[in-house]
Image (tube, rainbow, N blue to C red; front, side, top):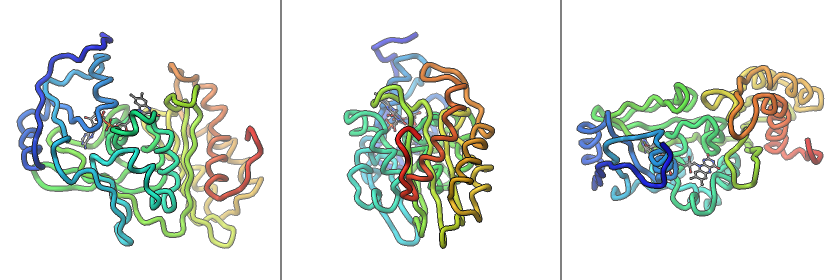
Length: 294
Ligand SMILES: Cc1cc2nc3c(=O)[nH]c(=O)nc-3n(C[C@H](O)[C@H](O)[C@H](O)COP(=O)(O)OP(=O)(O)OC[C@H]3O[C@@H](n4cnc5c(N)ncnc54)[C@H](O)[C@@H]3O)c2cc1C
């Protein structure tokens, strides 16, 4: 039942990762991890999540980092906020899709506490930073009683609101590879400026001499999880991004998605605009001017 009042739960405040792992071992099956709480607390109030135990990451030092290494790429720690991403010149320059998604991910108030890793773990099919990260590629580092393991972002979501995380594990960080020669962009269509996406998309493209070498195209709110448009990606590779390619993408994109009607939009609308949106983010990534409304 929807309420403004949180249901009763026990709060654990581990002071370090060792204590966190012990809490997860003891309570994992009945617990939820709390990062910024902008999804979790809303869902607990609405009754769609009712953990007996909430394990907060708030008192664990060193989880709020954003670091870049030429070989490893960008590491975003479990408690690094969406605001930290919007404040990072490095992210803005090297990972424009992530930067652009963070700028529209929620409101000034939520961005101040909401984490990027929380956006991935929430496993919403419409997550904005999650959409950008799926397009950029990378992996989530999960830590549990047997140490750390990496899960490729392509395999991370297994279904609606489901991930590969086991109940005795937490997500330590997400790592996005160095951009190399890639360019990227994100965009979303919303009912109002501050609303969740009706549909979102991101493109990461590598061009050489005017020919597309590699493309990763992600789309959200069109399936139970965020998805890549693999037929569109394949179509792009080895071709120049010209009017003929864009025309084909407009027709192909709707064939790759399986949207539903929900409170934010209809399946029909999402199918209709999917091609336009994917063409828009590709052009945005490549710096090709788009006509108003296209
Ligand atoms: C007003 C409002 C507007 C919003 N607008 C947007 C929007 O425009 N776009 C968008 O994508 N989202 C939006 N959201 C949703 C939310 O803000 C984001 O998904 C946010 O990034 C979640 O991060 P968090 O730190 O608050 O996660 P939390 O709420 O703390 O956690 C979310 C989920 O992830 C799990 N989790 C979090 N961290 C970890 C971890 N390290 N290891 C394992 N599990 C973990 C939690 O248990 C929970 O299930 C909005 C929410 C609100 C309230």
